[in-house]
Length: 374
Image 1 (tube, rainbow, N blue to C red):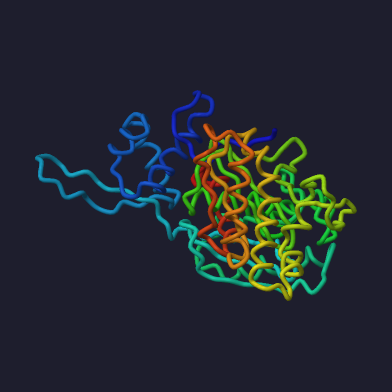
Image 2: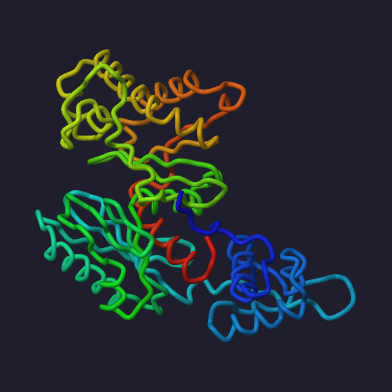
């Protein structure tokens, strides 16, 4: 299964990889832990003080680290100079292309906080026309940036390879679209592109407190998932890990799916299908329909939980539909279908990041790709 490096560097590596890794190690320490002295960083990373001093000098020259002044200390001797990441030094352009009706974008700071927003109506655009709208949205955000742009991160629907090529996004009429290259060439900036669910799980890991072994299920117009194992994103041999929407759940038939199969998870769980099933239902019928959808999700996820020993499942989508009978039934089904001694403590919860989860995940992609932090 295709995987990237772990999101957060935590130890020294071989000499031939040392400089870039150790630079990221210093940045990661400041990014997560905040204000530190050079001696603090050396102690916490295991790097020598000489190495830390050289790296800090380089990072200050690059505008990434700032000196904050001396620490107040009661003990004798010269007080240590405190350092921090300059969190206003750069901005990130994040794009979310997952909605069926519009593309959304934002400028984010290095902490993943959104400082400006923009959107463009899709209006049925596909192919080159949809690509032109991505370029236009990006241009608007780059032009509005009040600090240098560190990079462009994109969460796209469909199958996306590690080179940022959208191999297949049927709703946008894209097949083999080199989106990363198109954006990088157009703006002269680093660009990273991933499937929207894979971007979302990165946001949950960095900003939502997700465990290092987790699965985030996105439920909207379709159903997808992003996976982390040992803090490392998993993409699969064909970059389709997490494409669970068209897995058939159960052997009792079900509605015909857009893909032609009968009983796919999306027929039970996608928001349009859920709304259609709930239309005109009384309270009892509504709970029953939501619990049935949750049970089907549990059936689909149980083998994944068992195979990967996941500790946490996170749901992203409309909380009024997902948080309640549906999520309760999902958890009950998961526990019923996996080994209690290993998975009895499995947690299932809603994301805390709301509609901005893909935008913030796009920012994590840039932070990890350009600075080695998350």
